[in-house]
Structure formats: structure tokens, C-alpha cells
Length: 279
Image: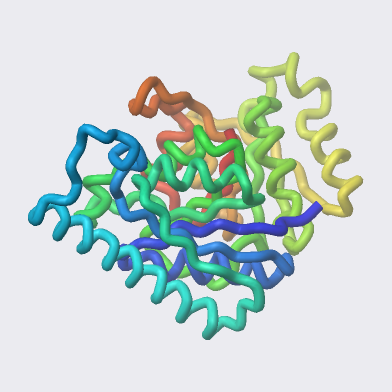
């Protein structure tokens, strides 16, 4: 099991270079093809609606500006990929809005790399729910990179949140290529006695055996906590010096509204290290 195609979201954010670097490092380690994709921000449905005239002078100039910004972002991606020595990659310009465009493209990739929303960036106020929308709609694992900090290594010391759910199961399975290269993998089970029907007499033992068969050596930590699980997970990651969290992503979308579970919402707002989520 390995990643063969990795998709990274490319835009004009000041944080884009960090996520491109991380995606490139994973691609090289996995001998995978890397795709840098930039969306124009114009919904594909605009082009499908024959009643809309997008040739007007003012609107046309705005569209040209959006294309110029997307192309510049792709040039930055190209420069980083070349400098890092990525052997197999391509850049892709897509006429679509970021959330929908990424979610569609992700279905043909093994891993998607996006950035956490930075509330201080102007662009983020326009596309404020991109990470969660993509995670809930792409059917692929999404690696989310925090907007604050620099990350020399991702996945050397991994922390896996295990609650026996379908989402957590998908996340662990989807993270196997990263976990195989980790030096340390810890599976955290929070308040296991509250879910005896899921965890049994030895909480974490079954998932540890599953990962062991993939040649992944892990430690299991049973963690009682009175904190909400999201903050407890971040606190444990800080105590252990983790550089990656693997967890299920909980929630759903109703039309364009994104409704998240509490742990997922906490993590998306306050993550301090990269987080791999699967829904």
C-alpha cells in the first residue's frame, strides 16, 4: 500500500509554499506523482449557464485577473517542485471554485494536501470552509497543514486517535503509507471505559494488531480525560512531541452548509501540527 498520486491545493496564500513543500516531500518518499492544482474561483456552473454573459468588459477583466492569479500560483508551485527535485509532477489550472474543484479532482488521487484556514488572510474570508468541505466530499484522506509554524518533518512521530468508528478506521487505513515510515506511532484511546462495546477488555489491542501486520510498531495509550477529546488530543500531541495527528473527520454537508462534529471542529480551528483526516 502506497500513495501513487498526491494532489496539493495551490493558491496565492502566503502559506502555500509550506504545504507544497510537505506534499513534495511525501511524493518523493512515496515515489508518487505530484499534482499542483489552482482554481480560478469561478464556479464551473457559470460556464454551463448559457443565460449568463461573461464577456462584458468589467466582468471579463475580473476573470482575466483571476486566471492571472491562478497561473502565478502555479508558477510558484513549479519553482518549488523543481528546486526540491520532484521527478514526476504537473501543474493544473481548473476553471472552478476551490472547494468543488478540489473535491472533484481528489477522487482520482490517493492523498490531498490543503492548508488550514487562516482567518487573517483576505482570501480565507471568501473560502472559509475549504478544508472541511473537501474532507467531507472527496472520499480521500486529506492532510491539513496549519497556517502557523514550519514543519521540518511530518509523520516521524505520529499520534493516531482511535475511537472504533468508521471514520477513524478509514483514517488509519489511509495513513498506512505515512505510518510505515514513522519512527514512532502512538494510538490514543480516550476514556475507553465509556465505550466498552467498541474497545473490549483491551482497548486499542485489535487496531494495534492490525497495524502490526503492516509492519508498523505502535504503542497504545489509554487516556482518561475530563477535557473535550479535541483539546485532549492536542495536549497529548504537544506532550509527546508529535508531528502528525491521524483521526476520523466527523460531519456532513447540507447544501453548501458544513456541519462538523465537536472534535473535528476543534481540530480544524486550533491544530498546531499537520492533521490527516478521513471521513
